[in-house]
Image 1 (tube, rainbow, N blue to C red):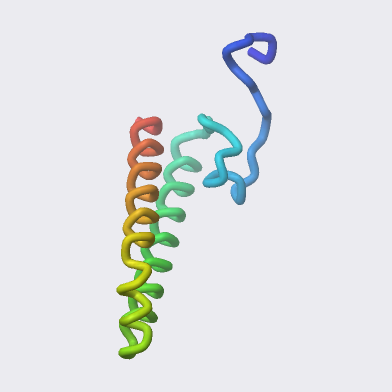
Image 2 (cartoon, rainbow, N blue to C red):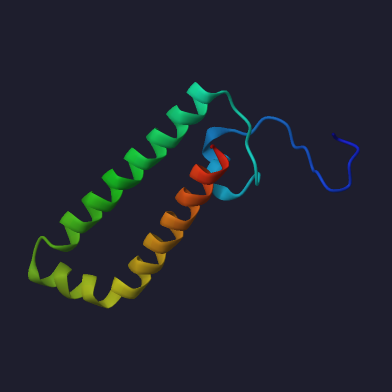
Amino acid sequence: MQQSSEISFIGNVEARDLLNGAADVVVTDGFTGNMVLKTLEGTAMGVFKMVKEALMSNLKSKLAAAMVKPELKVIKIKWITRSMAVRASSV
C-alpha cells in the first residue's frame, strides 16, 4: 500500500488532526469510528448553541450577529458537507 502512487499512507492520525485535513480517509473499527463521529457532532452542536446564545444576548451582539451572518452560514454549510462526507464514508 505504501508503494502505490495513488495512495499516500500517512500512518496514525491524531484526533486533533481529523478536521484539519490530515487525511482523506481514516480507517477505524466500528465502535471507535462511531465514538469519534458522535463526539464531533455533539461538540459542534454545543459550540454552535453557545455562539448563538452569545450573539442573541443583547442588542449590541444582535447587531454584530447580523453583520457576520453570511460568514456563519458558510461555516454551517462547510460543517454539514464534511459531516455528510464522513457519514457516507463510514457506511
